[in-house]
Image 1 (tube, rainbow, N blue to C red):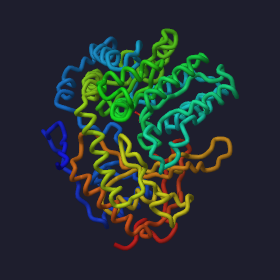
Image 2: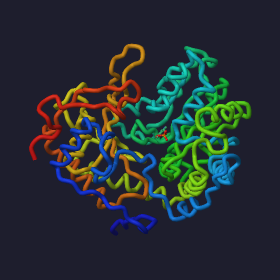
Image 3: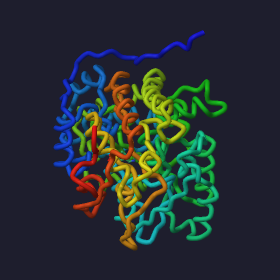
Image 4: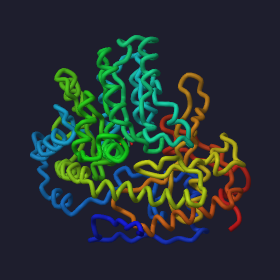
Length: 467
Ligand SMILES: *Cc1c(COP(=O)(O)O)cnc(C)c1O
């Protein structure tokens, strides 16, 4: 019998028109943007796969919730609705709202890290590591080796390698480790999940040594879906039950609600420990806002509370990850080198294998993202050497194993036809890779350089030659 198709569990109520451009217009736009897709104007973009952060389409229920905004400076009703949702689905005791994920990372780094500390994590994330470093900490990667291998099919590439964690404890001592930062559905590894068994074991190991575990819960719902799909004993548990269990092995979380929680802005820090929460509540007023809004409008907190409830619905998360899978499968069918297994929020193209004629210092992933834009108006993002930045000690470029272009799928925004157009463009470049020209820096900012850096082609004046 034929496999039956699935379709989105929603229909379209309002549309936003997209700008159609020609390759010549896009060649000019990308040059003016310094060959950095972050510097393009969104009006010049056709299909925007730059990020899934804050790019969600909210539901009619969320828009209705916006009308319930209680914009009181202190003690807004919406804070209490949000607190209830976080408590119900994530289970943590104290909620400190922040304007977005990095706001929470900033607060946690400030209250927990001391100069000279070591902060282990399962692969770095750009903002997370930078806040740790700015607080005097040193990030230590304790993710399993499979995560760094784009060809490994291991189903839980987000897992912490317990031996690496134990080795760090033995080397520096538990009292130099303020917490372990545990990321679910590890972004930089390609949206790869951790298993529940691993999360539990990580909690046990850390707690035995008195080290708290802070979850980067940004994509914990997506991780929950993969646990349900792949891990023994979870097929009959709901997404909400799995999410709750993940959090139960940890002591708090930082959260970018712009991802899983289906809102355009927002985040939070959640903490079980009363004393640490008190510190966070005190410092949030310095950097974000009063502890009952933390940089968000009341209406945004209300929409987030509704979004959290929607995010754990099985039909939602299956369609969300199903769309990513749909795009990835089309690329795999044409032999395009992408990270396997297909992850939760995007397709990560292995630019080193895609463009073998470019060396690492010609930034193949940056060049491929720029060329893809010229070809079809699809905007992707570099996740390789440019994102990794320079080593703060030596000042040298960091060349991570993974040199990737990320096609990130916004939640509930694009249709399958948009995925088809995207796949066709990637495949056409893959069939003529030598058309893509390498890049070099002509402006490099000091912090998180990938956002604002400018480049130029190493040869000629175009990143994509011929047609
Ligand atoms: C997006 C993200 C963050 C940072 O959140 P912002 O809301 O962009 O500040 C932190 N960790 C992970 C895993 C993320 O994906």
